[in-house]
Length: 274
Image (cartoon, rainbow, N blue to C red; front, top):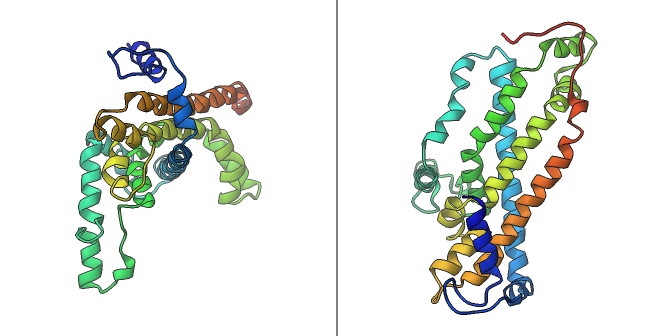
């Protein structure tokens, strides 16, 4: 079920005509795509966008995981379930909500700051690179939280206590104890967020497109829906670039996992989660 559509896209990227039409195998689609300077601009936009989404989602997911599993903050049991709520809403509705709130001229928050507080300079324009990263990154926080929170809750708190008793402060303990032990989970969340951002569709089209910001997915949609006749051949080449980007990341991640044993903790006493 997974292999068949992928093979069809790969075959279409080498076909000289649209699917189902007479043609022949050729490399012209890749030659025209790779010699087009716009391709590298779109690829750069995709990498910057995906990196920003991953950093935002992992950072907030890490903070929420620390609050809910390693502190006695008020309402932390309630906060434990908050990150799951975005999973119940379609991406289209969430992006539409951000547009209603932060649209350049009509967004409710921007109107409030401009008309009622006189702070026109404080407006946030959702139709921008920052807006696309924000909308997608917030939607992917649950992914990072689901990957990091269980790993953080399973860490033995005695390791943190030993660091604090030995004179290490909070930041020292996080930097030398907690973060290194969580590195496999953090990298797992980062890789998954990055791959999901590369293939994300709603925010790049609904928010990035009006801002003139194009990534691989929005370019594929443009070639297949707005061109007459549709350019399926070049869309296939763009799809293979997206696939190569994510596969390269997963290959690097698999090589990282080969050394995962160095993150094992060997102690002289058992530890049971509360």
